Image (tube, rainbow, N blue to C red):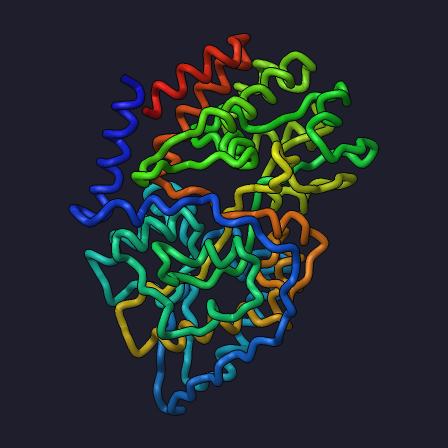
Length: 413
């Protein structure tokens, strides 16, 4: 019954986005080929020559940002961004950049505002907008943003981390330029020397993570690191029994070792686990990498894998084009590239806590970046997230792996 309800919800979700279009392209397999280990040779990328505007012309370029990137905030990263925007205006006589701050969630969120404005006042749409990967996907499938293919060759440059190239593409079409990365990582106190799950289990220390996450990203990450696939041969959401068993067996072993406990089900949001770690309720936490900026005396590393296949999910922020004025699209693209130039974005990222998207930016987190892949599609998470979340809950409450695996496999048939 659960499986049927979730699948119906999944198809309703997709139908609401793309009508009667072929569904197979939406189910892109988020388990790409293993990433080669830093064999790239970074090359300088040349920013396109600014488009000169007549001095007498006045052109307004609208930019929408979430509060975290507000250039008028009282932070060093905000000051850097504000100055960079001013530099772009100076290079484009007659251009005025109009920055608007939109919420990340709720009725006034970036995505909702974009949808409403597209219908009610298309002339007021932002020429450039910063979207998270999930919102980028929704905006692209709803036709709210324009592809950058044909306007920028930036995505063709070889010096992207593979995860970032995935973030910028929807159905193999370039819809945006990823400028800030965020990924699930293991953060722990430096006195702990842990590199494997065995070392974590024998440490006699609890490990926190958002166990009551309806998308179950941590569990799905463990499953995929055991070489599990998220789609079947028909392109529908699915789970494989062997890697599923490996992931759930790890959880059961953690319950036995007291690494995991039913109390984890009280954590519904990443902010809760992050705060608990900061308050020293535990010495280990799986959290989003951007949180590490605010945690002192800690080590950040990739989440240990289950089958010698390093894998972690990455989210991030992407510059996208949404404006209705074609004459502004090229200038908006140039602004996005200008904001990603090496001489600016490295310092800016360091002050925001986000990870780089390009190899030329160099990072102490290279090992993590090389193991990262874009999070699964919204539709995929809608189906598989609740199933994995329920399986985790049952294990934390004492059920046996074999029983839970059988139940899960029945749901995904």
